[in-house]
Length: 439
Image 1 (tube, rainbow, N blue to C red):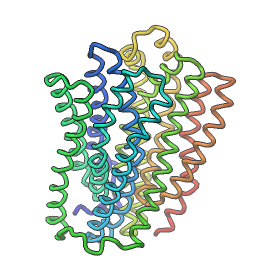
Image 2 (image 1 turned 90 degrees about the vertical axis):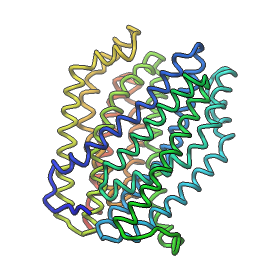
Image 3 (image 1 turned 30 degrees about the vertical axis):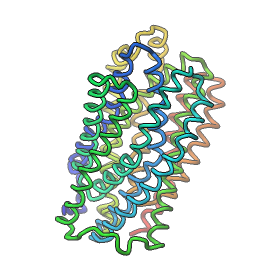
Image 4 (image 1 turned 135 degrees about the vertical axis):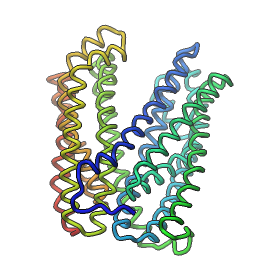
């Protein structure tokens, strides 16, 4: 196994992050293809139904992203200690947690559909299409949650190429199968949902076998279920996962809050904010690659109790992320209008969007620190601090946004969002000294 020294460089971190860049780009591509497939149907209700249904399922699955983040933190530290047997046990325990969570999601199908019908003003035909999609796609949840864990495992042992290859294969299969089912088999929205289900299970089948063989070959251990149910280990896993779950729920709510306040300002601003958010999300996909790579390196350094390596990794990752964010902002400066014009042909939306360029330029560099600190705390398994920092930041953001939006309109909302990102960094930085106590 590769052993990172105390002299870990920006070049090494960049090398680890490059595969993650490409895999992160594959994720939004699936949504674009699904939208394109349904957007070219004869009736607009197919696109409306797919938009709502995929958003709901994505939010549900993403809410359990703790299965990836919690796995990275624990496994990277065990990897630093060369405790390969416990790494294997942790992996199997998280598999069981994922299956349990997936069963609960599946059993909640009718409740999910009820809430959709309750809160979305849609026609009966659109709701029926949503019901078809949800009723099929929900059965992909076991596979999709296990995918999170496998990604976390390979990130934790610093094999970012493998985790990235998994995402690329899953996304590619999803695109190919869904396109075939819709275009050749005329399965419409059923085909889009079924494509995701089939792609997820094929990917899981391939990579569970690969992971099993990898563990036997590299760790010289044959995975088994003996001594798996150790109460202290299970409680530790559940505590870490619950903290990240709460953190993710609050983060998700903050983005829903932007939509809520944007809608109160008017449909034009709701649409504009959806366009502007694409720039923020795209920047986050790039910058999160550094955070993902840093998680494994940080956990490894803590496992080895190598404080010098830890501090060097923190310094290099933050500097590299900030420099990349500056490049992204510079690219946005010259391409903003071109991209906006591709996203919408409505002149009023273009005009309003142009007036918000300043926020798209400022936010990526100032938000980069929060992304990196997230990765550092996840790698250190300091999940209570991540939870508390997010709760404080979101509560402050909501309070501030109500006031600023009232007096400064949509610019007040985006200024509040900028402050939210800064608060995430400040609150995590406040807790940083707790990580240093591990050495």
